Amino acid sequence: LVSRTRSRQLEALADAAHGTGSRRGVLAALLLYVSASALRTPLQKLGLRLRRGLRHLWVTHLTRHFLATYIEAQCLQLGLTPDTLAPAALPDQRISEDVDKFVSLALSLSLDALQGVVHIYTFGRELLSISRELTLASMVGAAAITAGTLSLGRRLCELYADERRTAGEFTYTLTRIRENAESISFYGGQRHEVREATAKLDARQLAEWKRFGLKDVVECVRDSCHVALCALPSLVLSGDRPQRPPAGSAQGRGGHEDGHGHGDAHGHAHDHGHSHGHAPDHGHSHGHGHDDGHGHGGTVAAALSLGSAGSLGLVSRASEAFEDVLEHFSIVAQNISDFSRLAAVARDLHAYQLN
Image 1: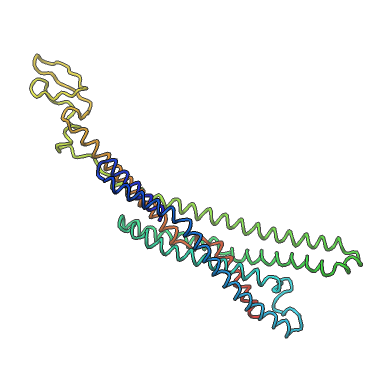
Image 2: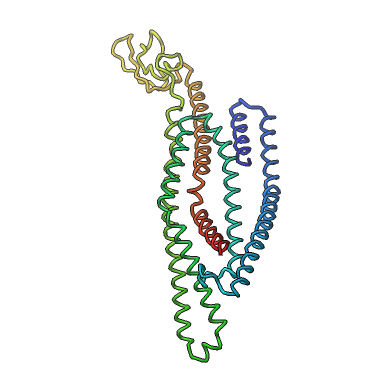
């Protein structure tokens, strides 16, 4: 909203500078921009507060549900971890953390999707009013980017699950050392436990390094394709720029009749012409294309200036709308890492529920 009001303010200032706008319109656009800027922070804080409240309620509900299920299962199995879950999974220690992570990711992605729908509707209408070809290109480009990103990042979920598994094993090793510290000290197994804990740490770091490496590659390819596609508005709309008037028109004669006037007969020699006498009364002038002789040069220059400004404004609006539509149409590609993390956490929570 702030960017759109800012754009309208700049358009009003440009119209006023060219004499096509009124002072009242400029003041109205400025007032609208200031109001939107002043309301931006309070609205953002209010939305953040509502989001935190919703997250708090959701986390509390899911945590209570999983804790009740887990405690009941532990009581039925006399405190033993179910066979389908490895002890290193530590469901008793990770339920709250996993629920919090799941809710945060699900809520964030849901709100991003809702905001994306609003952006697509707003900027999609504007882009459609400018060019149908660009609108179709944004949808096809978003589909291509999404398909390519999903293909390249298909192992992100698996790598994040492996990272969580190795992190759980490292935490379980430290917990076991703490609980059996007396026995370890009695049998002199400190060095062995340190080596084992170090190996678990190295495995966790390696799993994290692999995931981040693939994530960087996927994001690099995705962003490169996005930047390349964002050049389409300038290419598509480059042919819509205003051209010079035809040579035969009244305004075109001033710029194209380059010095074929005969000096005394017509008196059309341009100010910057050079006369070379070939006969007593036949001076042939060679002009340099200046429009001063007919008095139409200033009008043509002003028209071309206004046309160029309008064309640049159209390309700017189309580029902004195209980029926004392309980004929000490819929301899965833009958030591929978060979607992979959400899938991995949801799978673990489902395993807790089954056991």
